[in-house]
Length: 194
Image (cartoon, rainbow, N blue to C red; front, side, top):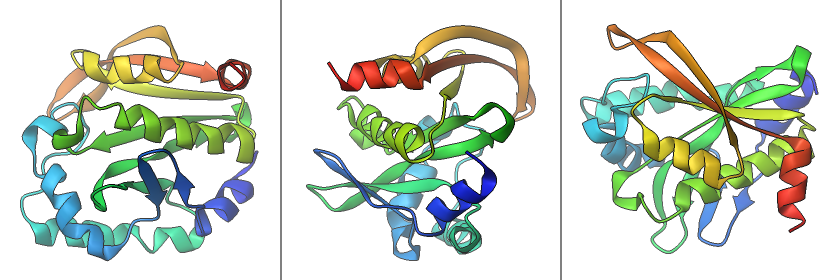
């Protein structure tokens, strides 16, 4: 895997379909649905960014980020709830380590859809792209200590807890201790073949 392979995939990211979800590229008409969860302090509590103050802020974000698909520099999918047609979050790759053939995955979900297994469903679809289309060796995910719910989602996807990094990130004016979980391609393939 190299940067050009990643860029080629994300210039026109594939639509991913699961039992209850559709993952596709972000669009400007996602603004109100995105703002609904992005303004929620409970949703953003364990994220690196502050709640969006108003829909104009969310639209400015989308206007900034959507053109990055053209160059393959944005690696997120919009998560669409099939039954309602609502955009309920995002899931994708937050970073790639090309030298070590690995990536970090990130996700956020509207609080109204928590507790239904939808985050794990989206993550597994993105992991499949990582392991089969990008031939990654390792995918990891990070969470702030205190966010046990996020760790449970990672473990539900077959990731193993590796440990913590004390005060590893400075977020919202304070240092946060970060937990790390990961899955290797062989682990993922074994889970798929069960």
